[in-house]
Every structure is written in C-alpha cells, then in structure tokens.
Image (cartoon, rainbow, N blue to C red; front, side, top):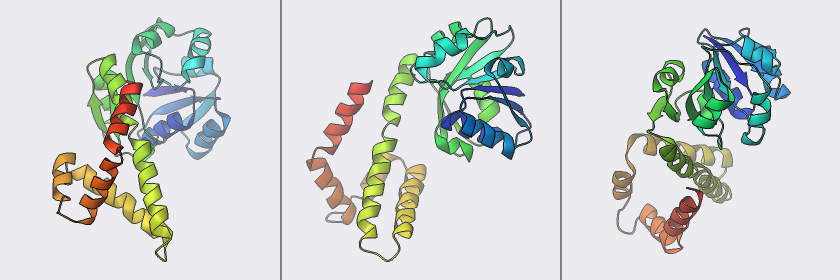
Length: 240
C-alpha cells in the first residue's frame, strides 16, 4: 500500500514502526521533525514530505494530529476521491474527520498504544474493520466496536493502563529498596502482571489469588478498604 501519515508524533511513529516491514511505501509529514527524520533514516521505504505531499503520495492516510489543530491542518489540504483515511485523533469523531478529508473518506478510527511498534497489542476501533485488520491484524488483536458511544466507553476504560503502570512502578520502587537488583525486581513485576492478565480472565485470576491470609488477598482487601474500587469507578464515570 501507499500509506501517508499526517502528524508524525510518538504514537503515529510507533504505528509506522509496526508496519514498516510489510512492504508498504510510507510517506510521513514533517511534523514532528524528530520522529519523521528518525523513521526516514532508519527505513528505506519511509520518506518525508510536507502535508500536501503526504496526501498526494498516498492512497491510505493515517491522521495522527492533535484535535485542536485538525481543522486548520486538514482544511488547508486537497484530498482526492478514492483515498481513505484511518484516524488516530482522540477528540475528533469519525464523522467529523470524514467531513475534514472530503472528497476522500475517513472510514475507520482506532486508538493505538505505543506497543504497536513491536506488535502484540490490542487495537480498539470502529468503522471499517477489514482495512484495519488487513494492515495491523497480523501482529495485533483487533477489537471492533459498534459505534462512537462504545469508543468513548473503551477510551475511558483503557485509562486504567496508567494507574496500573503507576502501581507496578511504585511496587517496584518499594521492592528495589529491599533487594540487590532494582531493575530485575521491576522486570519481574511487569512480566508477572502482563503474563497472568494475558492468559486468565480477571475474576478467575482474583479467585485463584484469594487464598485466605495470603499476600495477594491481604493487599487487595487493604486497598479496597482504602477506597480503590470506588475511586476507580468514579474516575471512569467522570471521563465517559
């Protein structure tokens, strides 16, 4: 495919790295210069152009702009019929993105995570699941959603990733003060959480770790008593 990327920030750059070995010809915008220049230097099939050059060179466009600049940037460009766009723009609906790229069509919205650069990451999306699966499905798990309301709910719920990372980081700091190799301790905790949650559903895992008086039960009950569950659900409800 001839793929163009408008808005080459951290996430869009990770997206490019995740598909760069799949035979695509990829044109990335000058914004941001650090990411675009790094990609172009590292991969022969990635080149840099201004935004209109990206549009002109591409059949499939990835829109990685910040919502507050999307109207100005996309409104200054000339798209063509037959082009399609996949948007990564949080805060811009698929319908609004579609209007901004006419006569091209915005046909899917997805929210990538940084791990897409290596593959093995979940991708929540709605719209045309076939093209998203065609481009990203070989190495990632695609989670098609029904509509914008489901996307909003998923976007809110995925924010649990940052608190979980904070919790693991804090536990690793605590552990690091008590063991000889702090980095090994953090690596152990990250693998522990990732491997167990990737293979066992949450409720069966909680039950399996619910041995009376065991370490896991004692810490979970302590944190629940401190308001962990209520704080999480209240925070999610405020974002949805």
